[in-house]
Image (cartoon, rainbow, N blue to C red; front, top):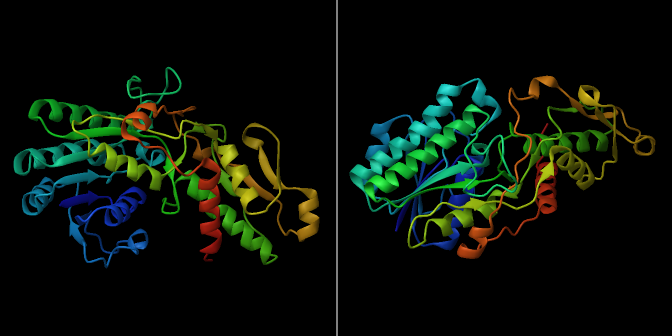
Length: 351
């Protein structure tokens, strides 16, 4: 068995490779773009594995994708490569669409032409639902994106459906609600929080001043899971008798404010909120400040530049069909997810 996985330098692709190496006997081909200085930090557990092979390709280059599919003849093509940062998609909308939508079309074309028996997975996003009409959101919820990123993923979803029905391909585009972990990129709000908490933790420990974590909308609600749980669900989706799209989610929703509170709690830092609107802040409590001789007081402050042009206020998934039909469910709770991320960043903190 041969499996081609894209986006292996990122969170999901790296977790997918780790899962496949542990749970299958397949040869894994991990695709990356050729760059002058690639960051392999997420790949350190498998980069030298004898069943893993690094290959070069690019979602914006159809020739490279054609060559990979033609030469490897993969049984599975799992696509996690993307411009995956929602906030940045307003600044680079065309690149976002080229990678996330047209890139999926290029993958499907390569499979159609050179290996039509290959099973294809396209990573969908709850951002496709956007301005939600009802909660929880299931696979039938209308597509109502509120960002170029969400629109690009919605376009990919339609392309997968067209190719599946036109060419009888095993192609799926399943909706992944928010998922995080220790491999999450630092520009994402959850990792920004956990790394910020780690930075402040070590500053307090060393009796040094610290700058606050600066964030935007604290009241946005998200359905968070751990990426490691989701890759197992993806593999189950890929191995059904017939292709079918699913939602993967925790079926819970939490605010960014809750993520912050839990993160500081895990680090043993006592914070209190005060103020409102853009002047709202979280500071260390008076008792904690006195006890620890704190050099700074503000832990979190609002920075308007981090507000999105159009915010998605609530995302809450309904993964009931995946749980019933695939026998899948997340193993890592919200509390455990936050604790894992904060502990990892504290233990691996570097100035």
